[in-house]
Length: 291
Image (cartoon, rainbow, N blue to C red; front, side, top):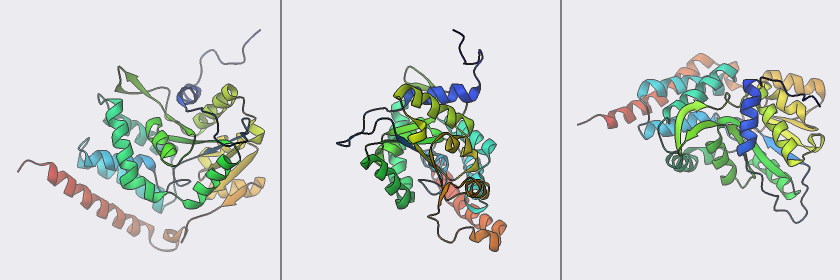
Protein backbone atom coordinates (compact mmCIF):
# COMPACT_ATOMS: atom_id res chain seq x y z
CA UNK A 1 0.00 0.00 0.00
CA UNK A 2 1.35 3.40 -0.93
CA UNK A 3 2.13 5.79 1.93
CA UNK A 4 0.55 9.25 2.03
CA UNK A 5 3.76 10.68 3.52
CA UNK A 6 5.91 12.74 1.14
CA UNK A 7 9.18 11.13 0.04
CA UNK A 8 11.07 14.19 1.28
CA UNK A 9 9.33 15.56 4.41
CA UNK A 10 9.27 19.31 4.87
CA UNK A 11 11.37 21.03 7.58
CA UNK A 12 8.09 21.76 9.39
CA UNK A 13 7.20 18.07 9.45
CA UNK A 14 10.70 17.08 10.55
CA UNK A 15 10.55 19.63 13.39
CA UNK A 16 7.04 18.57 14.36
CA UNK A 17 7.80 14.87 14.44
CA UNK A 18 11.01 15.48 16.38
CA UNK A 19 9.09 17.53 18.94
CA UNK A 20 6.44 14.82 19.31
CA UNK A 21 9.10 12.15 19.70
CA UNK A 22 10.64 13.80 22.78
CA UNK A 23 7.39 14.99 24.40
CA UNK A 24 6.30 13.71 27.79
CA UNK A 25 3.32 11.37 27.35
CA UNK A 26 2.55 9.97 30.80
CA UNK A 27 -1.07 9.22 31.67
CA UNK A 28 -3.31 11.85 33.24
CA UNK A 29 -3.46 11.78 37.04
CA UNK A 30 -7.21 12.30 37.29
CA UNK A 31 -9.22 9.46 38.88
CA UNK A 32 -11.27 9.40 35.67
CA UNK A 33 -8.81 9.87 32.81
CA UNK A 34 -10.00 11.01 29.40
CA UNK A 35 -7.20 9.65 27.18
CA UNK A 36 -8.53 10.73 23.78
CA UNK A 37 -8.90 14.43 24.63
CA UNK A 38 -6.08 16.86 25.38
CA UNK A 39 -5.27 20.57 25.40
CA UNK A 40 -2.42 22.42 23.71
CA UNK A 41 -1.25 25.86 24.84
CA UNK A 42 1.12 28.25 23.11
CA UNK A 43 3.47 29.85 25.66
CA UNK A 44 4.40 33.37 24.57
CA UNK A 45 1.70 35.93 25.42
CA UNK A 46 -0.73 33.07 26.01
CA UNK A 47 0.60 31.45 29.18
CA UNK A 48 3.45 33.91 29.82
CA UNK A 49 3.55 37.67 29.24
CA UNK A 50 6.16 38.35 26.58
CA UNK A 51 8.54 35.94 24.88
CA UNK A 52 10.08 33.04 26.80
CA UNK A 53 13.08 33.01 24.46
CA UNK A 54 13.78 36.62 25.54
CA UNK A 55 13.82 35.65 29.21
CA UNK A 56 16.12 32.75 28.37
CA UNK A 57 18.43 35.07 26.45
CA UNK A 58 18.60 37.59 29.28
CA UNK A 59 19.28 34.81 31.76
CA UNK A 60 22.08 33.46 29.59
CA UNK A 61 23.49 36.99 29.26
CA UNK A 62 23.61 37.34 33.03
CA UNK A 63 25.59 34.12 33.05
CA UNK A 64 28.03 35.45 30.44
CA UNK A 65 26.99 33.21 27.56
CA UNK A 66 27.17 36.18 25.14
CA UNK A 67 27.80 39.92 24.96
CA UNK A 68 25.95 43.23 25.15
CA UNK A 69 25.33 43.56 21.42
CA UNK A 70 23.44 40.28 21.37
CA UNK A 71 21.32 41.39 24.34
CA UNK A 72 20.27 44.59 22.57
CA UNK A 73 19.18 42.59 19.54
CA UNK A 74 16.97 40.41 21.69
CA UNK A 75 15.54 43.46 23.45
CA UNK A 76 14.62 45.03 20.11
CA UNK A 77 12.59 41.97 19.16
CA UNK A 78 10.94 41.92 22.59
CA UNK A 79 9.93 45.59 22.24
CA UNK A 80 8.25 44.83 18.92
CA UNK A 81 6.50 41.80 20.42
CA UNK A 82 5.25 43.57 23.56
CA UNK A 83 4.71 47.19 22.42
CA UNK A 84 3.72 46.84 18.77
CA UNK A 85 1.89 43.55 19.20
CA UNK A 86 3.81 41.94 16.35
CA UNK A 87 5.12 38.38 16.37
CA UNK A 88 7.01 37.94 13.13
CA UNK A 89 7.62 34.30 12.22
CA UNK A 90 11.07 35.06 10.83
CA UNK A 91 12.11 37.06 13.89
CA UNK A 92 10.96 34.35 16.28
CA UNK A 93 12.73 31.66 14.28
CA UNK A 94 15.94 33.72 14.15
CA UNK A 95 15.77 34.41 17.89
CA UNK A 96 15.34 30.71 18.65
CA UNK A 97 18.21 29.68 16.41
CA UNK A 98 20.42 32.42 17.88
CA UNK A 99 19.66 31.39 21.46
CA UNK A 100 20.38 27.76 20.63
CA UNK A 101 23.65 28.82 19.02
CA UNK A 102 24.73 30.36 22.31
CA UNK A 103 24.49 27.01 24.09
CA UNK A 104 26.63 25.22 21.52
CA UNK A 105 29.22 22.98 23.21
CA UNK A 106 27.45 23.30 26.57
CA UNK A 107 26.13 20.22 28.35
CA UNK A 108 22.38 19.69 28.26
CA UNK A 109 22.32 19.14 32.03
CA UNK A 110 23.97 22.53 32.59
CA UNK A 111 21.51 24.39 30.38
CA UNK A 112 18.50 22.62 31.89
CA UNK A 113 19.61 23.66 35.38
CA UNK A 114 20.04 27.24 34.16
CA UNK A 115 16.57 27.07 32.60
CA UNK A 116 15.08 26.13 35.97
CA UNK A 117 16.83 29.09 37.56
CA UNK A 118 15.58 31.44 34.83
CA UNK A 119 12.01 30.25 35.36
CA UNK A 120 12.29 31.02 39.06
CA UNK A 121 13.99 34.38 38.44
CA UNK A 122 11.89 35.74 35.57
CA UNK A 123 9.24 33.56 33.99
CA UNK A 124 7.17 32.35 36.93
CA UNK A 125 5.99 35.86 37.81
CA UNK A 126 4.89 36.46 34.21
CA UNK A 127 2.34 33.63 34.05
CA UNK A 128 -1.27 34.63 33.36
CA UNK A 129 -3.34 33.14 36.23
CA UNK A 130 -6.42 32.90 33.99
CA UNK A 131 -4.64 30.83 31.35
CA UNK A 132 -3.16 28.59 34.01
CA UNK A 133 -6.66 28.05 35.42
CA UNK A 134 -7.84 26.97 31.95
CA UNK A 135 -5.01 24.46 31.71
CA UNK A 136 -5.73 23.04 35.14
CA UNK A 137 -9.40 22.68 34.27
CA UNK A 138 -8.37 20.31 31.49
CA UNK A 139 -6.21 18.36 33.92
CA UNK A 140 -9.12 18.15 36.36
CA UNK A 141 -11.22 16.71 33.53
CA UNK A 142 -8.69 13.90 33.12
CA UNK A 143 -7.05 15.34 30.02
CA UNK A 144 -3.37 15.79 29.39
CA UNK A 145 -2.04 19.29 28.71
CA UNK A 146 0.98 20.12 26.58
CA UNK A 147 2.66 23.46 25.94
CA UNK A 148 3.52 23.98 22.26
CA UNK A 149 6.24 26.53 21.60
CA UNK A 150 9.10 27.67 19.39
CA UNK A 151 11.15 27.85 22.58
CA UNK A 152 13.74 25.11 23.07
CA UNK A 153 11.97 21.96 24.21
CA UNK A 154 14.07 21.89 27.38
CA UNK A 155 12.83 25.35 28.43
CA UNK A 156 9.25 24.61 27.37
CA UNK A 157 9.30 21.39 29.40
CA UNK A 158 10.65 23.21 32.46
CA UNK A 159 7.78 25.71 32.22
CA UNK A 160 5.26 22.88 31.83
CA UNK A 161 6.61 20.95 34.78
CA UNK A 162 6.82 24.01 37.02
CA UNK A 163 3.14 24.68 36.23
CA UNK A 164 2.10 21.08 36.88
CA UNK A 165 1.26 20.29 33.24
CA UNK A 166 1.92 17.09 31.30
CA UNK A 167 4.84 18.26 29.18
CA UNK A 168 5.79 20.28 26.14
CA UNK A 169 6.38 20.24 22.42
CA UNK A 170 9.23 22.60 21.50
CA UNK A 171 12.14 23.24 19.20
CA UNK A 172 14.51 20.28 19.24
CA UNK A 173 18.26 20.80 19.20
CA UNK A 174 20.76 18.29 17.96
CA UNK A 175 22.60 16.71 20.90
CA UNK A 176 25.68 14.50 20.80
CA UNK A 177 27.07 12.83 23.89
CA UNK A 178 24.94 15.06 26.11
CA UNK A 179 26.23 18.28 24.51
CA UNK A 180 24.48 20.75 22.18
CA UNK A 181 25.95 20.90 18.66
CA UNK A 182 24.35 24.30 17.89
CA UNK A 183 22.17 22.82 15.13
CA UNK A 184 18.43 22.21 15.03
CA UNK A 185 16.43 19.13 14.11
CA UNK A 186 14.34 20.50 11.25
CA UNK A 187 13.56 24.10 12.12
CA UNK A 188 12.06 26.05 15.06
CA UNK A 189 8.67 24.74 16.13
CA UNK A 190 6.70 27.68 14.82
CA UNK A 191 3.58 28.13 12.70
CA UNK A 192 2.89 25.01 10.58
CA UNK A 193 5.52 23.02 12.50
CA UNK A 194 3.36 23.24 15.64
CA UNK A 195 0.45 21.69 13.77
CA UNK A 196 2.71 18.90 12.52
CA UNK A 197 3.89 18.21 16.07
CA UNK A 198 0.33 17.97 17.37
CA UNK A 199 -0.71 15.66 14.53
CA UNK A 200 2.25 13.38 15.18
CA UNK A 201 1.55 13.28 18.91
CA UNK A 202 -2.16 12.68 18.34
CA UNK A 203 -1.42 9.76 16.03
CA UNK A 204 0.92 8.16 18.53
CA UNK A 205 -1.27 8.76 21.59
CA UNK A 206 -4.64 7.98 20.02
CA UNK A 207 -6.01 11.48 20.52
CA UNK A 208 -9.26 12.53 18.84
CA UNK A 209 -8.40 16.04 17.67
CA UNK A 210 -12.09 16.90 17.34
CA UNK A 211 -12.26 16.50 21.14
CA UNK A 212 -9.07 18.44 21.80
CA UNK A 213 -8.58 22.14 22.61
CA UNK A 214 -5.88 24.63 21.63
CA UNK A 215 -5.06 28.12 22.88
CA UNK A 216 -2.88 30.83 21.33
CA UNK A 217 -2.47 34.58 20.94
CA UNK A 218 -0.99 34.62 17.44
CA UNK A 219 -2.32 34.36 13.91
CA UNK A 220 0.82 32.35 13.19
CA UNK A 221 -0.83 29.56 15.19
CA UNK A 222 -3.99 29.38 13.08
CA UNK A 223 -2.79 26.00 11.67
CA UNK A 224 -2.59 24.63 15.22
CA UNK A 225 -5.91 26.13 16.31
CA UNK A 226 -7.64 24.86 13.17
CA UNK A 227 -6.70 21.26 13.97
CA UNK A 228 -8.83 20.94 17.09
CA UNK A 229 -12.51 20.97 17.92
CA UNK A 230 -12.18 23.67 20.59
CA UNK A 231 -9.90 26.53 19.46
CA UNK A 232 -9.55 29.58 21.69
CA UNK A 233 -7.82 32.88 20.97
CA UNK A 234 -6.14 34.13 24.16
CA UNK A 235 -4.87 37.72 24.22
CA UNK A 236 -5.13 37.65 20.43
CA UNK A 237 -3.27 39.81 17.97
CA UNK A 238 -5.36 41.75 15.46
CA UNK A 239 -5.28 39.11 12.73
CA UNK A 240 -6.18 36.26 15.06
CA UNK A 241 -8.96 38.25 16.71
CA UNK A 242 -10.51 38.94 13.30
CA UNK A 243 -10.12 35.30 12.23
CA UNK A 244 -11.60 34.02 15.49
CA UNK A 245 -14.61 36.32 15.18
CA UNK A 246 -15.20 35.23 11.59
CA UNK A 247 -15.21 31.54 12.58
CA UNK A 248 -16.98 31.91 15.91
CA UNK A 249 -14.03 30.79 18.00
CA UNK A 250 -13.91 31.69 21.68
CA UNK A 251 -11.88 34.81 22.50
CA UNK A 252 -10.40 35.52 25.95
CA UNK A 253 -8.26 38.53 26.87
CA UNK A 254 -6.46 38.72 30.21
CA UNK A 255 -4.43 41.82 29.40
CA UNK A 256 -5.02 45.16 31.07
CA UNK A 257 -4.62 48.38 29.13
CA UNK A 258 -4.52 46.36 25.92
CA UNK A 259 -2.89 48.12 22.98
CA UNK A 260 -2.22 51.26 25.06
CA UNK A 261 0.82 51.93 22.93
CA UNK A 262 -1.33 52.36 19.84
CA UNK A 263 -3.08 55.41 21.26
CA UNK A 264 0.13 56.91 22.59
CA UNK A 265 3.61 57.04 21.17
CA UNK A 266 4.69 53.44 20.60
CA UNK A 267 8.10 54.34 19.21
CA UNK A 268 8.99 56.46 22.23
CA UNK A 269 7.56 53.89 24.59
CA UNK A 270 9.59 51.20 22.92
CA UNK A 271 12.70 53.34 23.08
CA UNK A 272 12.18 53.74 26.82
CA UNK A 273 11.94 50.01 27.34
CA UNK A 274 14.95 49.44 25.12
CA UNK A 275 17.11 52.00 26.91
CA UNK A 276 16.13 50.66 30.32
CA UNK A 277 16.99 47.06 29.52
CA UNK A 278 20.07 48.08 27.59
CA UNK A 279 21.25 49.96 30.69
CA UNK A 280 20.86 46.79 32.68
CA UNK A 281 22.80 44.94 30.02
CA UNK A 282 25.60 47.52 30.24
CA UNK A 283 25.78 46.84 33.96
CA UNK A 284 26.13 43.14 33.25
CA UNK A 285 28.83 43.87 30.69
CA UNK A 286 30.75 46.07 33.14
CA UNK A 287 30.73 43.33 35.76
CA UNK A 288 32.33 41.02 33.21
CA UNK A 289 35.31 43.29 32.56
CA UNK A 290 38.53 42.63 34.46
CA UNK A 291 39.31 45.21 37.11
